[in-house]
Image 1: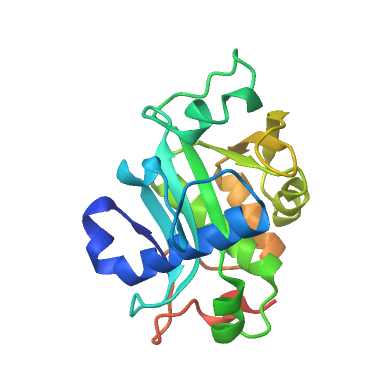
Image 2: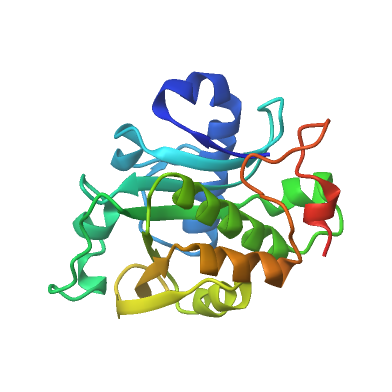
Length: 219
């Protein structure tokens, strides 16, 4: 299932969140060489202490993490303004109740191979984006802001997402970091679902085993 986890639910999802932080370390520190805060085998920073919402793909038993995104409103402290301010122009108006920041999007590819054999990583990434769009529409969020490396633009475009690059800057890792504004709308959601051949929601969907239904996962 892909679900949202708020601060008061963290204890219920403890194992899943520990795995999420471990996956973040593997992706952003080990693979991408970003300058991030490491605590043993986990990537955890100050923003994780500010009660973010986590959009998490996990099993119903809450024992297996497949992928996740950290979500925070731009009306409070965000990585966007505090760390990645050089990636967008000063004139950009990126603070509003309907604009949220999405960070630390990652997949545990080994867990996906184990429990969803045959599903391409690109489809898994796109399913998480569809769930994100569905979550945002249900919470009156009209724009998502995120920082990403340039090659991810192709992946976003292929999934049907509409992203406008606001700027980019060097000095954060091996590649430049871009700042993009992602449109959240029913039109975008329809396009993304069509690209994946989906006829039912992804956010909150599961089968009797607590997994995303096979019809959704199948390419």
